[in-house]
Image (cartoon, rainbow, N blue to C red; front, side, top):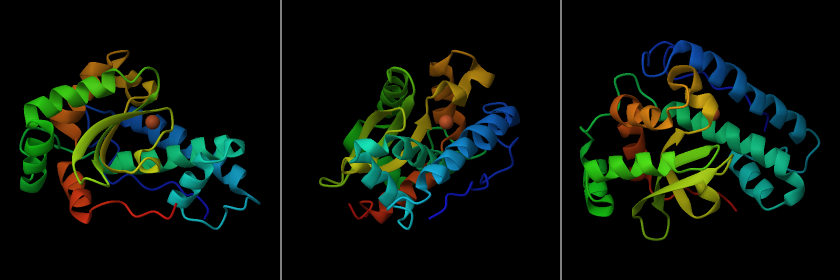
Length: 208
Ligand code: FE2
């Protein structure tokens, strides 16, 4: 497949002041676009060129010679997913029912989830991602982090929600204050309905 830049699912200024139009101009328009342009160059003539994005990510993750393709394809997947994890007037403690129940059962309730999710994101040393995932074997919700371009679905986890903690995600609006950015994500931007819809679909099915 050829990678293409997906449109944002909201206007670039719709999340202000929590995430500004200027951040989207750079984060979506330049960073995400660069992953797509670089990924397409690396995909040209590759044996993976006809595979789906998820298949490319999984195959490239297993081949040290394809680290460049993995990084760009996985960052394309991660960013496409991240835009859907954001919602104008999102976040807050009013979760849709099934997600709320699962968080209470598996993660100790919303307050503990919020504390632990922020901590997960803040303690990702350097660039990476904080995640709410579902374990494919147990069906339980878990928190995890991945470094750089890492994705949960190479390790048997289904992504439900993510927060990008690369500095390019927050430096324009929050400078170095990653904890404030992640708290704003949970309080004002997280798309709980998107996470719940993925939970309802069950384990992510990707041909390995
Ligand atoms: Fe990013």
